[in-house]
Image (cartoon, rainbow over all chains, first blue to last red; front, side, top):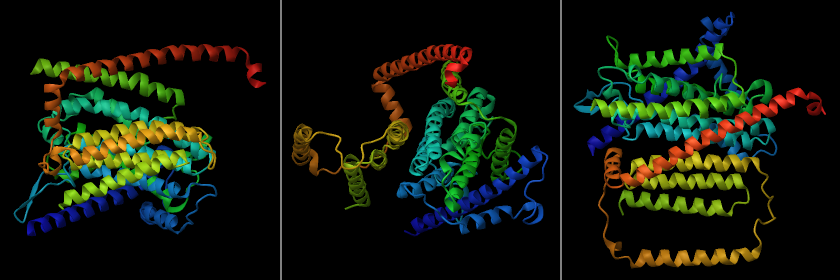
Length: 330
Length: 183
């Protein structure tokens, strides 16, 4: 019983720390994005709230919480209120299978440095990413607005298209690690990161995951100059904030999963494991911001062609090649 | 009753209630969402029975992919408004008849099956065990299904390629006669 209580307390502490760090970093990722984008466009970015605009995320939160939480007339009230929560919570839950260090021993008890080590960890991530479609689609539909509906439909089409190549690109990793568990996938990269052996899978994963996160150049569901803001046109206050929180947490989850699957997770020389994982997440986030500042938006037919005619066949061929090489080597 | 028993009845109640609500909604989008809740509950039942892989696949395939397609279609069509029924009353008769047959069969099975009083052992099948079992005893069906899916993918690619050429022709035709588009 005592052991059970101790385990429960450790789990709660882990949850609190992970949730706190993820939300804090997501808030500051907004600041990093605004600053970095500003430098790319030769401006200064936020520089009024605190030194270097460092208090800007706090100011944004205060602004969003104090704004009126409006529900448009004719909206489907329940779905309208729930949709942002679906987007934010699925993104946050994905982080629960990302390991951030080796097991440590605390007071004679082994504590794994991951919120939960599921033996279906990778599938858990894919399941949550497929559920986050509903937040976008239902949010757009429930707004009872043409822009919202079009954004929601575009979002649903885009996300189910790229989910296929996302899932297919990860099968070679599972074949090499012999496991769905994120902890065991990191374990399998003890001597070398998988990116050296799976550069094609890496590319497909990066492109598909960027499309899943609906950012430039894949931001058709919220394309400003045709759909106002797409599926979140009618949202205000903190519900709008939840959509954004979901987006930035999604960037971090993407960084964490990319690190775990291709870059060796928390492994790295000299520095502690958690620091390595954070460095890798940060670099991935910087890369995504850079892409946003550089590339124009794709056209809708280009988006669908890229997903269905390039990435999916490429991923299938990659699986075949990985299987053939695996057969020859063993 | 054990904790597992309580969870089982709780989740089953949610699944049955969500399905019942799903088939009685007038609003199609609401019906789709309740059906998703029902699939989600089914996935939790799978997890409770020690089949995490099936639970994940249930969410990914049914709740996450097939129902998105349903939602996609339903969002774009205009469903009949409340009050006007989608079926003629006479069509309820065969539906009710089949419901009754299934209900009787289910009740008979539940109360007359011999293993009813023996509690099942707690088991858990990791994805690895599941895969070994499937590929050892059912490899032929797996191969047949994967060939079928591969052919379907190739067919879809082929269809898409053909369609693209058609679109280009249409576009070049339209570019040549801009007045007709303007009018």
